[in-house]
Image (cartoon, rainbow, N blue to C red; front, side):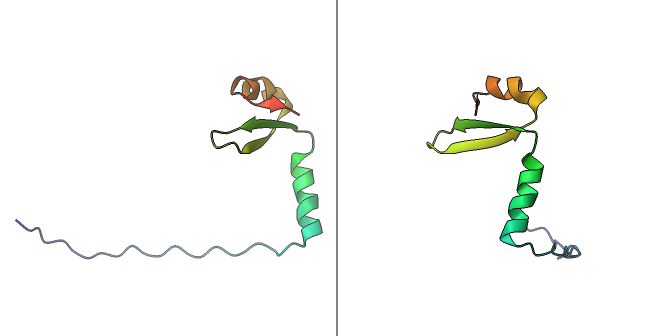
Length: 71
């Protein structure tokens, strides 16, 4: 009971172009701009690691309900 199956290959996706290479200082600056105006929330996960989330101010209560604490 073998079924004949055709070997059809999927077409490859076009490769994505890499973004611009940023220096360490540029990476820090862009990260700080993304996090500006957000509240930092923490929680210890099951393995004892500290999980960090940058949360919009209006969502703080929802994240506290999930067990996160505010910095």
